[in-house]
Image (cartoon, rainbow, N blue to C red; front, side, top):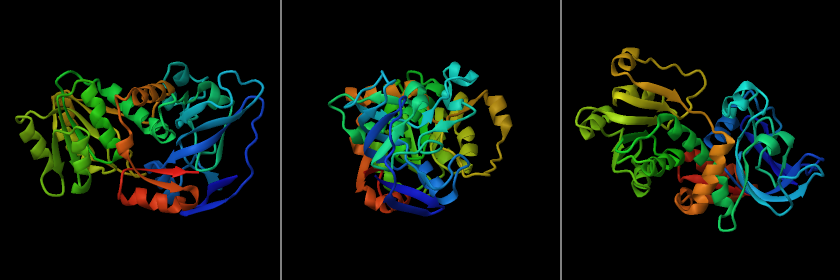
Amino acid sequence: MKAAVLESLENLVVQEVPTPVAGPDDALVRVHACAVCGSDIRIFHHGNNRVHPPAILGHESAGEIVAVGANVTAFRVGDRVALGSDVPCGECDFCRAGYGNNCQINYAMGYQFPGSFAEYVLLNRTVLNFGPVHRLPDQMSYDEGALAEPLACVLNAVELVDIKLGDTVVVMGAGPIGCMIIPVVLMRGATKVIAINRSPGRLGFAKQVGADVTVCSSEEEQVARVLEETGGLGADVIFTANPTPSSHADALQMARNRGRVNFFGGLPAGSKVELETNIIHYKELIVSGAHGSVPRHHRLAVELIASGKLDMKPFISHRFPLDEVNEAFRVAESKEGLRVIVKP
């Protein structure tokens, strides 16, 4: 088969590799769509201790099952499926408690397990038994199915902050996933959403998907503007959907007393953030992190997209064949568009 292989840092090569063969406990998927995630770009440039080149990346994907092993009963040939990233081991304390994204082994597609920037991807026994593999209904495209993975991560974060009716929510970062947060918090009952972005280009899309107020942080002071929009009290919920360390400190400043702050976007490795923890103490803030998702979030993401309640089509800005995967990575990193899909 043809696959995009990360041979070494910043060296992604499309080449012929052996097509995986499904063993008795496996399933083989013909990949129809795989989106480029920010973590793919970070691995491309900086590597990851779970990824050992030569490796096939890609964890936001969907395709058709073309072979199943004799022991596989949950899926059959012809099933259209969406695939997520985080794969619980199914055996540790965290996995048994339903928090597989906190599994200490931390399996993931496109990390320890070969990913979907390839014509075919193999789903092993652990992935099939415990992982985020869910059937797509007929009306849902493979491209939309690929975006169930980032949407699942959003659902995890939104669940952690417990959006309440009437909440004012700030989303710091208007990239594709930051913008996915907006319609989800509105569904949960938020009545005012403030989207903040350093460059103005993406704020129009944030407005399109439901933001009530947009703030360009390179043109005005973001904490002051949020306080102005909230009568000086601050927002009920803040998500830091960006890789900028200073946004974490600013999030505490713009939070209302007893507000909830979620550090959603990962920071560059080694980042240090100086937080004035007295703000957390005296405001009685609840501060959480959010990393990935668990399979039930992925299933719910598929259901929400299939129902039409969340429209993922506007989030897809570019499509590239597998031979142009390096251009797909360039476009995704340049922020020229939103989610970029590779079509193997």
